[in-house]
Length: 292
Image (cartoon, rainbow, N blue to C red; front, side, top):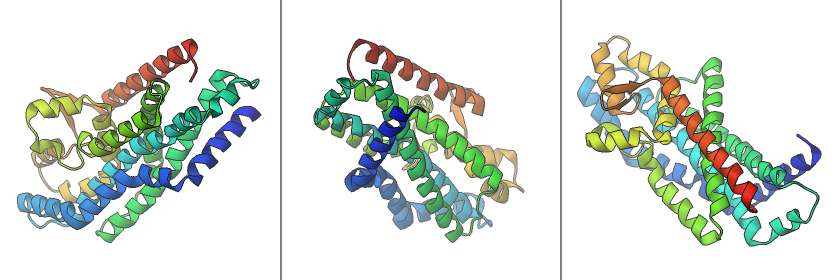
């Protein structure tokens, strides 16, 4: 990273972290989901699973891991969105005009916003991960192993880059704060549903499930859950039939089935990679024809 790019990234990081409102609203969806599960939905889900399977050791660990892995995915969407909002603010405040008259390439300026969004998202997602592990422990679960944490970090970074590509492209199209604020509100409202977090995907109609299962949010949360919940799944379903686990996995989003086709993890990773590549290419084409 050259010195100019490094300076721009640091500048963007400081600008975002000094804005407490931006940091708070990046966490708002996560806070809402966490409070809903602590106060209401968590107990309901534990009761539901217990009614289906009986009072088995590890149910609290299973449900809390399901919740926290979902929240982890949500933050890989909402935090990059909040961080990319700095580009809209700089355009509105004519800061970009100052950059354009400097001897800094437009691509360097664009890359600085991308890198700062990645860094901000990773830092705040790590905070969520720590909070999540504390909550899992409080529910009788166990800490993730070092190897599992490494895999989680890799998946989180990949998910952050995937959704940042989409929001960065939208930021090159959206010109006003109000429009971007509306986008943030819409994303914050629906991300819990799109990720199958407020309501387990299995309770929805088959057609709705098929639509949701083609979205990158479903792929990201499914892959993260498959790693995050592995210990809890082994604890709860280790001595049961595969049919019981498969029913749970399909109902609670640990597996994705579109029609009669069951997606494997590599299918989901490939889907996210294609999604990311498409919007990075669109962003490059947009930047080559106009200003940020």
